[in-house]
Amino acid sequence: MRFRHFLVLLAFVAAAPCAAADSPKAEIEQVVTRFQASLKTHDRAALANLFLADSKAWWNVLGDESYRKVKAKHPEAARYKAGTWQEFADYVGGTKASIEERFHNVRIETDGSVASVYFDFEFVADGKVGNKGAETWQLIRTDDGWKIASMLYSSNF
Image (cartoon, rainbow, N blue to C red; front, side, top):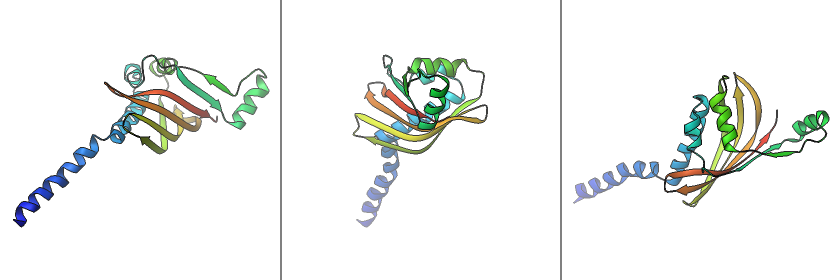
């Protein structure tokens, strides 16, 4: 009898990592990993696949020091600017520079249907940090997996 209980317990323990790998949080972690990989490989299509096709929610907000510098040269400049993932994907697919985005302190919150990812980042081009700040994504679970619905990030040059 004890041996049967041991086998049941062993089966449960062996299955636990598989269940965890299929968890919403693990799936979202894969979106984060694929995002970073698509930048390094300049894979526009892979990057595009991570976003809702019709999403236009993309905002860049200048940090205080960056805003002061930009405002000094361009008095009409705004602290924040809208963009699109499509513009970013075109840049990623077309640039000759080596690029990567390093993420630190990644935090994921989800109820299994919607999610928020928040992290500190450094955007690196040709080995030099050109921009750093905080970034947040809002994701939704679709029939095709998790998709980024919106992105906000701060820019500190």
